[in-house]
Amino acid sequence: MTSIESRRAEVATKLDLVRARMAARGLDAILLTTSANLAWVTAGGAAYINTATDAGVAAVIITPDTATLITDTIETPRLQAEEGLGDLGLTFVTEPWYARGSKAAELLRGQRAWGDDGSTPTAPDFTTDLRDQRTHLHPNEVARYREIGASAAAAMADAIRRVRPGMTEFEVAALLAAAAVTRGGLPIVNLVASDARIAAFRHPLPTDKTIERYVMLVLCLRRYGLIASITRLAHFGPLPADLQRRAVAVAQVEARMILGTQVGQTIGGMFALARTAYTEQGYPEAIEEHHQGGSTGYGSREVLARPDDPTPIALHQAFAWNPSVRGVKSEDTMLLGPTGPEILTAIDGWPTEEITSDGHTIARPLILER
Image (cartoon, rainbow, N blue to C red; front, side, top):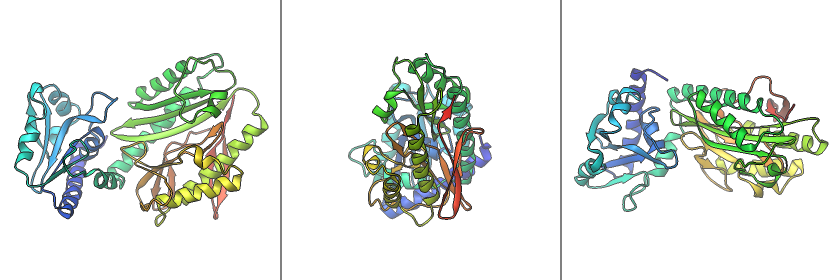
């Protein structure tokens, strides 16, 4: 984690961004309550308890002149001592646990016009503004993302290399969760499928099915609020020819998408690129059977690739494309930097295919034969 001094400077930069957008929208205050937005505005603070909800355990109110972090008597000790939230230049306010929300209501009562991140139906929704700002990564966030991507890759490599035929998918999911938590991450998505289930379901929750010859693991690991996504597949024994062909085809599509992620392109343009790539590989139906991923950051997908979406692609944004055809999927998290795409979740020693597109070559993962 970056130093408190560096985090304080990052927070100041983000407050300036929010205030500029508030002024453009004619708002006097913004209320932030989701764990994603709290992590963003506090430079990686973990202001959550229940991971089954988006709601955080604090609130931040930003006005043109103030920034106040409000939490209760239960959460104050940890948020100050372990998350450093009292040292970031925000005014720290503690309220009784039985009066949670009262201080925010009091502070907002005097504001002429205020918005929030979707928690109050009657307030202007500032969600899209925040998403746009979250996806343009601060240099500190880039450094944190590299650390998170390496952790996700290490967790995946650790777990998938421990898988054996005869294990249940539940047991494999436990391996993947343990590998993520051991590295300080939270496995917010932990999917496992084996054999015929891989082709049958694009989002396969683990079951008590016993693994025979083929397994797919999907991990979205969250740390400091940022999320790294990775998918890998392993096969016990020689790969069938059709499965090998499909794996190479998906690698080709993903390579086209990664290398096509460039400044000046749009999210909708990436959807069109994927559609063309699938057709060229002989799987035109695949674009209809699963989403192709999109930009990532404090949400596992900030903006999904959809037809004609005008959202522009810019430097210092992260993306997780996940092309798939029945029985095969490919997914890594990448950062778009000044020199091109940087894969954050690459696994050393994993089998890959070198793919060239538009004069550039990139290695994409294949199925690990065990």
